[in-house]
Length: 252
Image (cartoon, rainbow, N blue to C red; front, top):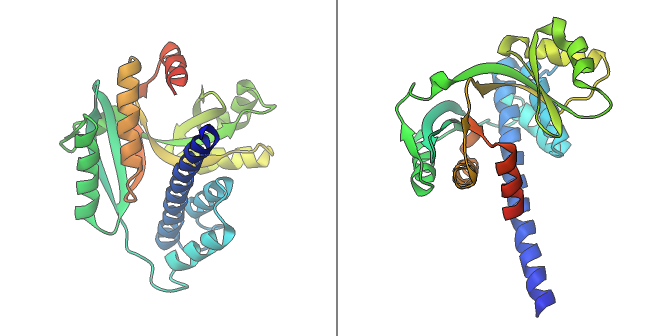
């Protein structure tokens, strides 16, 4: 029996991982479709589309899915879906600020799913503008740690507009003005340095540190929000100190 129950648990975990991957693929494909609609289906002349395709490829989205999304968005094949971008704001337990970016074809469904995730996970939605001021729109390029040090990267990207480099564990995040993200990514490409993603994101100007309980509750809410098909990105000012991160790892 023990073997069987272990297999059942493993199977359940795999199902959860597969479902998450499916959702992530769908979100990346949606990004491509919207980028192609906004700026045309040629990634050479549409840097937003180029970066959306690169990110999808890095996440192993099949090429067929990518090509179909480009054609749909560019009006070359079938009717694309008309998505609108919506922003919702709120707080996770412990006062952690949360910005939720939706890309949806059904506003009512999107807002009810976001509200439900907040309500069920101890958070609360806030009025427009009450959380957004804690974030800035920035360019963020993620570079996997390899043979290049922080100083090496800085030398390559400083003139392209990079403002700072943050050590995020397995990757370095290069922060710039949102308008400089293509220049930073291009500088890396010209130096033959691999990067994982390049995009504009909402970056917190100040962070809210949490204890173990606060971290678990905030992460639960973020996970519930990300579970919605309408939610494209969740940004927060959550700060998990090193000792709490170690406790989190032990608790899993």
